[in-house]
Image (cartoon, rainbow, N blue to C red; front, side, top):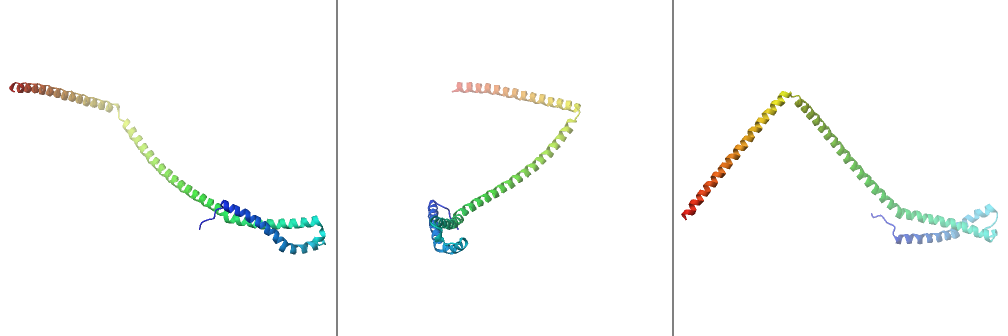
Length: 193
């Protein structure tokens, strides 16, 4: 079911209906309400309405007509508000509820993410404490072990440097020998041709 929405056409129609309702209110006053009410008013004041005179009679007629117009207009306004304004408000409320639902879902997701991050932080904190304990136990090595370790590392470093220089010297020697051999072969081949 689509909800009606007030358009400029509806607004013009609303104004026309208000004018018609005012006229209907005057007609209702003159034809139905005034004859019924005039009996009670005449009994209350002790005179007939026609005996009141020009201004008082006009005032009586205007007050009654204005009251009838106001009632008829109020009925039309209530109808148009119910027909066109209430659905707009209901749509706005529905959108607000949907927004609140989305916000609640986002908040639940954020809460879940925060809980996961807290758990991860606890795990990392315990891992950090374990590593700190291991570092403390490693630092408890006595200085002799550290000196011994340093001397072994420097000996390994010296051996690996010597090995590198030996490999370089062998490579250089092979390169020189192969160059001499290539020159000798080149000379041999160039003389034989």
